Length: 388
Image (cartoon, rainbow, N blue to C red; front, side):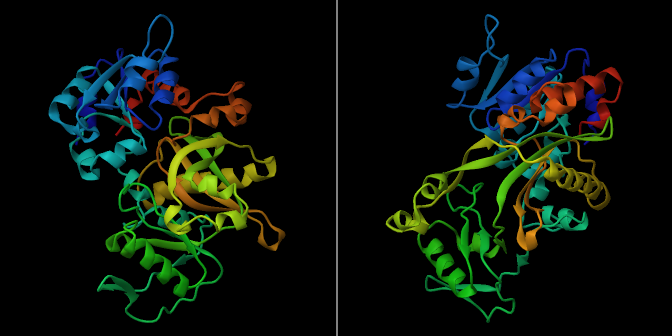
């Protein structure tokens, strides 16, 4: 796909910022509007009220200029929708919603609208493909949890079993990440300290319809890091060759957070506890970290940017996040990264941590920083460097 040809037909003095109606759309609209860009939000029918009513631009209030309503999010690839976006000279800001609801191949090959950032790195967030995020982290010299190879499984008469005895012994507590059977873009995580425990829990998850056997076969089993969890939300400017820390946060998950607030003896009173717990993303909490950890975070961020270029032949353009925990074994503090977001993270609260303010004099949001980068690219005739 020749995005440069599409850009040649754009009026670069009249750019519109486009985004899918969810995840981080309001952050993008508010931030880019501050830099005098128009915006349009593509909404699924029935979900548009947040954007075309409550935050609609009117009388000096609101941040959403216009809305395009589609029957379902994936309709954004329909030719008439793409044509309308191009008519508005749209640069699209992708987010997790965009890739969850749309087909990767469709977006990579048939979405003929310029995307801010890489349109081919995003699939590497998925753990069931080769040379994925774990590969980029390891090749970059960034510590990740110990990964366990799941022994070959079979499913007969409703029972899950190993075809042979596992060769790799579990050491300590492990976390299994498998896609939920209903909300396939969410994970049905569970912990185990032995393969015997693992098989028993996995069997129950499959029986209860929480995980399909196919998803279990593709699951990831990794070391559980007992440490404070922090998401380091970065921005890499290819125009300036600079890495910036936009902010730090941690996740709130339904209904895991509610369970964790209970004493252990009360947790055990919950019927069918493992079936009851859900790991559905609900929101984020802004956190800060001490400055001695910033050096380690920046070091990991720099390594990841280089690894993307060297091992995926792609520039990391703009927002990304390294999500991990601080391991304190052996009386050392070490960042262990267990998840990567290769696009704008879903937390608008990053601007309420001080790190962008240390750099710019005042805290700025991801939407603002994206607007600044696009504005710089347009004014220096470098827009082709930051869109794909």
